[in-house]
Image (cartoon, rainbow over all chains, first blue to last red):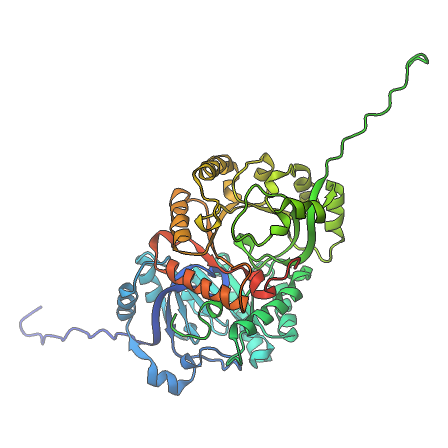
Length: 252
Length: 252
């Protein structure tokens, strides 16, 4: 550089931040392919759906998300995860819909720290980083959610095409509250028979009386409906294990 | 044959029979590696253990077994399974301890009918047919059972040596009622780290009050004890799902 040149200030890197609702763990994964295994959780705010029975509206409702989330960088999130006790094999990215965010860097950093990284999304919006996960749980929303309209069904079909690249690490998880949901789940099972299928008995929100009884009764219904159904012989039927353990507590 | 020879009566085949307590299904497997999947069950009478919290004493107590079991041949059992509704992927052989019986022929016949065959045993007595299963669930009994003495521990160690031939299809499942059980389970986890481990929250028998609450509370304890434990990071913690669904009903 010649002395006559004006020094240029170093470009200030734009550090992206994400709306984080909670970072907690270690706890036990309550649903899907890793049900029963220890994991940390990172929950992101924001969702493109408004499911009638959403159990994490505090991560969905924009005014609540604005009030309660923290804007954290990838470094902040990795540091917070590292400060948690223990070292489970898994970190689970959840929401809301974590696919609203660009989490490439976070997934890579957590994997470099030795974690396997899972995320759950409803399958409305494909992001390339979903293909880099150790586990992608695709949880399309059945009729009882109020979200199973034609437009969203088409989005889901496109998502599943993109998700083919992550086929060996993907599972489908469908919450079932009633017969209509189960019929819908069966259509999905037939359309995507190569993807492992988890059927999750819906937990009423809020529940009246003992939530474990409410979950247990609906789980019984789902077990009895699925057990004899040849088209669902590959489906794994589970209750939400975190509700069995901790009832409706959050952050555990 | 010359006319002078005395005709010999055809040798009458000795047809082996087995003491069968119940054959039922389709239902949902409540425990272990196939938890949540549809299965039929065949329960055999007789057991070499007397666990303090046994939930199937009707298949263990010799006088009850004598009274309530039917002596069935392999053909009888296969026929009874075929008459059940549906065609789940799995048939589970249970007990009592099914390893008391010679079930080579039954396993083969069920597999020829298109079923995958699972069995659960406490790991006291090796039988070559266990090596031919699609899933062998080895469930050694921890201190709270009253069965974890030195002699049985040595039997279990020998069983695990024999089971090496079925390593890729074996899992360990340990019921945990208390801290002593969990410490014992951890020793097993360390000794057999290559075998997938399922920890099952013990169900009190008989339970006072709401059995789902009793199971849920103990499941919570087990989740919280395991989640942060690096030596159990590969363990999958589950409640008995059939108790969540059907409480203490049998034959479902």
